[in-house]
Length: 378
Image 1 (spheres, rainbow, N blue to C red):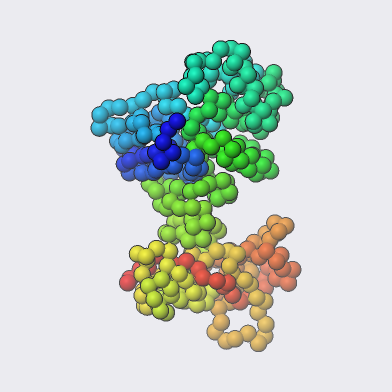
Image 2 (cartoon, rainbow, N blue to C red):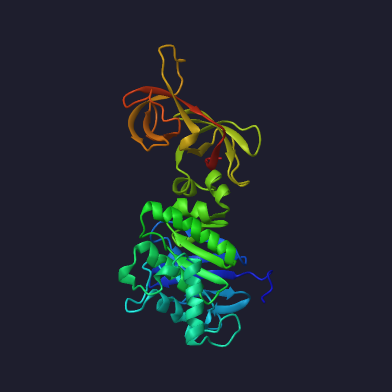
């Protein structure tokens, strides 16, 4: 058994280029055994490329990768271990099931030339038994004799997951495995997948562009931008304290507001005058130092702004605006508001207030502190 203190994955200074295109630049990550880490970002940010280099399906341009303390990539020495020798499972977005094989045969396929937890290569009857057990783990035991064309998308993805875990790998890589499924099934499967991962105990690297998936499933999230790490944090910290304007814009439904810092009582707190009025803020990082007179870029969550119908006796000079759009979503209403001085902002109202509608004038009330993500001109 491997030393639990040894990282499941250690990536150092990883680069991957395609000619003049730098898909991954200086990526570094240490993943603990049993940890679930998600690579999150938009298309083209390098997340899937990073995953494929870990799997051995792409060749690193520069860098070093260790899996459970064993080097599998080292460009300094020319080391590149073949994918089938890296002792990991992988689940693809496209399922990648053999169409001429039943579910049981698909799941048993990796066992043909694979030792299972130090035992000799499984015989056909043992392979079938292990495959059937893996299908039962993902609630597909009844599908053993069905072919992929006879299964729904959710069933195919469960079979693909069973195939990835059948040989009990300590590490599983998942490349946007739920993106082809409908919203309700995606929600159900992400809960099932995380429960399965915790029960079995394998480490997981999961790729997605969906922030809801990343927040719901991860121990930590790596937010990527242009091949680099923008922020690496636990889900709550990434959502509530984005460290850069980009992170705030991508995760957590934030409005980015700019304005002068009018108060700075200490190195961590300040007040910024914005288009929705004075906003109390806290600095996202110790390096973000508020200073009176400098310009602050503030991230305000859409659900932290409350709209108050403007009355004839409203305070003169108070920040206000006009509701220019709304979208009812059952549990909440999303309002688009045009402030008197500034760009449109989004407000998410969980009270589903019926007293505010398009064309109404409103004033703003910010609940709690916003996040100061950047200071300019200090």
